[in-house]
Image (cartoon, rainbow, N blue to C red; front, side, top):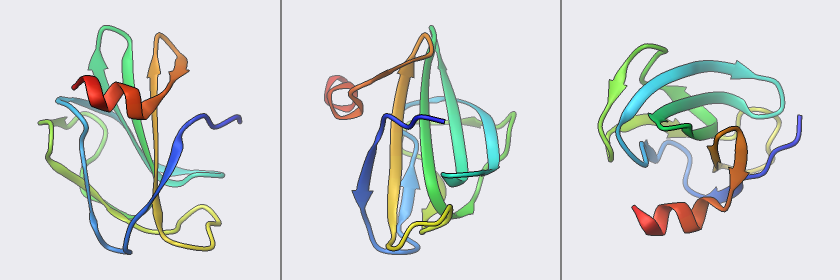
Length: 103
């Protein structure tokens, strides 16, 4: 698996918030990225949040932008705490920081 996101340094237990409204399509452990939530925002847009210590939503849940969906951790073999954040449009990774700036 090739990851194409950014690792954002954050304190363990800090809230992870949804970048935009959508539906949780995955909320489970995934090798290499630990506890992972994936949100489908429609029109081929997905956001991924990994290395969490806890997940507060499950697949099928609808979430609002800014809603707390997880807690920062170091799952998936990370040496220090942080949030892995990735954005995909039509299956292709895009610069997640540029995507956030447009929101």
